Image 1: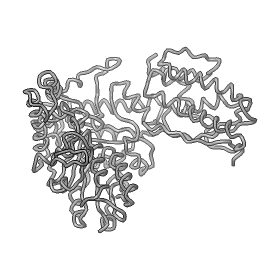
Image 2 (image 1 turned 90 degrees about the vertical axis):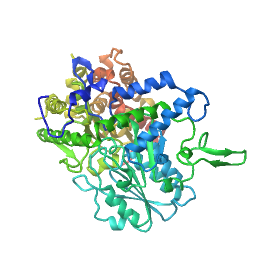
Image 3 (image 1 turned 45 degrees about the vertical axis):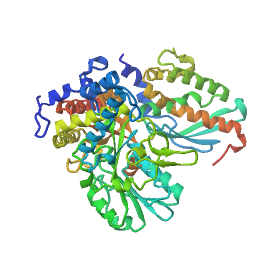
Image 4 (image 1 turned 60 degrees about the vertical axis):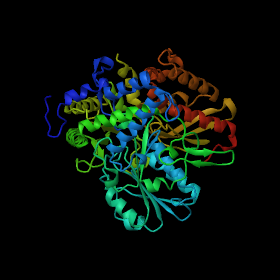
Length: 421
Length: 157
């Protein structure tokens, strides 16, 4: 490695070898420079192998079969739950509910809170979100409040891309029933003061939901210490597969939610007239679950655990700092969100004067550099900054300083191509 | 020529830097707003026809577009190609352009019909960008069919 930065993962070259796709060569012989990990992370060989091994040797449905394969499959599936629980420091494995993704986990909460029960949201209640949410943490709450006559409110943003907490005492009030917010913004990169907001919300008796989709991949997470009552994330951003997400919830609160999907495995008994329901987590896992995906997720969090999340976080800070320095050298480039690494994640969104984000992404792609262009499912946050779309670069534990150099060179090339002075 | 240069033809970059007939004007018979939901590109487009039915003439196409070079250049070229044409002829050009864009790079464009529009042939090889090139064209067809269906709405101002 030519560039040495304090904080980079030791043996970064070896770590990169764990991810076979990073060795790919793209069109015109360009090596892949993958800077789209906030979109989805790449997968280490151990995750791929674990999933293949499960399908080759242990495949069977879970919790239903008496045969040996059924036992092995169930054991692997439930072991994944144990691994996830340990990874996020959940007090109990039963508090870990497998879903399809973070979106489904948020919809599970927003849907079940529409029905009678202690957590029901009704007319006059308020649901509080933020202007930097991903659409998946906006639309479900719009649906809930529209359906129940509740009111949707939100924290605005400051010009430097942080939550504007100046009116927190007005926004968090005795009518507030739910506060649902993102821990790390997928667009701005901002790390929000979740604990501080959660403590305030708890004073008025509100439930706190944390979208940790970008947090769990890049920092140590202790669900209890976070202050969350419910926390969601998705498997494919933590070097696991797509098709599997996680809802963690405090046992007492999960137990107060009515069922979501009805079907097999979520019941205790069924008659033609009515049914009774299983305990958590099975109550929220109707139907055959994504078994091999859960097994893959278990291998993924094991992998991250071996690397050490404190070290992953240090790497992310080091490489994001280097990225921010590099982007600062590109004339005409303006970053939306914090421009220093303090309380910041590894996603950096920006605009380049006179070149549309799609054209930037296309030019970078022609050099093997994968970034995202568009609104990143955060249209309100873009509107807040008066832009329609942006380029987003997102780093991860396998990102090298050389890849950032290639990006900066690619941006200069893009400017020349579009004749920007 | 690389695929990239084939997509970003000089003609396209020129139209992007200096779009033709940009801005919203009156009078107009209908106005539509189209969005590409995957990337957020938007266009507000107005069509003003003179006459009725397919013999009507496209008197003006005005627009306010937010988007990439491909979507901006494409609507600029559209106005060059369609303004002044009978609606029936304009629809034929529209069909030729759509066919070119959906041809995965296998369609040989007719320069007599598409003029500067042939420059978009290279875009057809980039599946993610075809919708960019078609955004303004789909908006024009939508707006035009609204005027043709309700000619008495013409001359809003």
